[in-house]
Image (cartoon, rainbow, N blue to C red; front, top):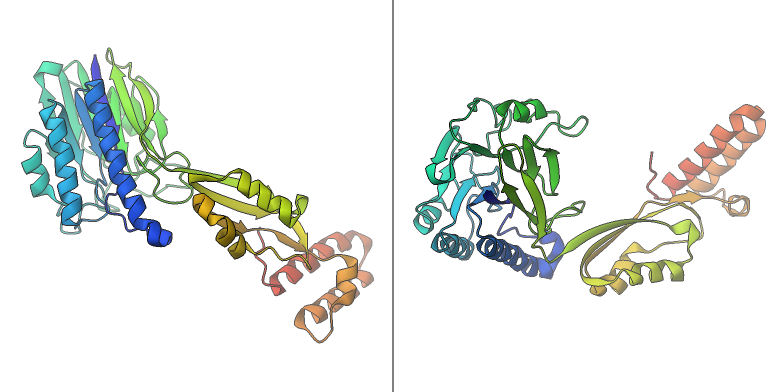
Length: 372
């Protein structure tokens, strides 16, 4: 039985400018997530900890951040746990300098550190071969190019940092294609780069992203995890997600047309959680006279969350009474009058399109965002 702990994309030292004064609090949360991951590795007595890139947020982390990481690596070394680290695009500079590499080697002299060339490391006592490579510069090819096929040991695993091809999302020439992973025939491929946990391929050629161990940015609803992998026999990797992050992210769509302002506030209040990063997207058709003040909602309710963001994605809908009352002295009023005259003179089958154009144009002239 081989046991692995797979983590990636910690981005230690990230500034979190969008959090203002709470940025330092979230930087500490990133460190706490690594501490919990290390404690999990020790308690589970894993054979190998795999760090798949972006351990740091930049090639030049602070001295305090470096000292923190070296202390965590020493804990793993003292517990007899092997460590393998690949650099990501964030912690590797343009000159291929890898953040704090000298310090990391001193802290964990038995660890395996992968560079930009493909390398293999055999662990005879585990009957295991580890193949790895750090991130490549954009446009220089897939991180899996040139990897050896076949194996000389019972188990074979890989470690890399890069994005897997996804139609319409990741289509760059250097993306990893699933067939590349299958062709390698590894028991498990530990990947880094995506900040939400995701299975890329199931066994027998299992490949996963663990996501960031702690929340980093909006739209990352699957962050906060590390992965525990058990491989009892070749091609039979079992992957279990373990939560180590403190903060969680949730995005909710709310139809503002179905709620008055008081009910809208109550819906947001009901989700209150000091550890929640809550993003609310308001939708629906609302009348001209209703103003939804998102800044006020964030200000009044924000302290009940770790971070609250309210996005106004509503459409403006002008009722007949509102249209009648618009002044011809305004651009909006003149636009509405001209459009209504055109609608009245149009054929019956043309009117629905023109009426929609009236509403969209009025929304734009009123400073509203219009979704396609």
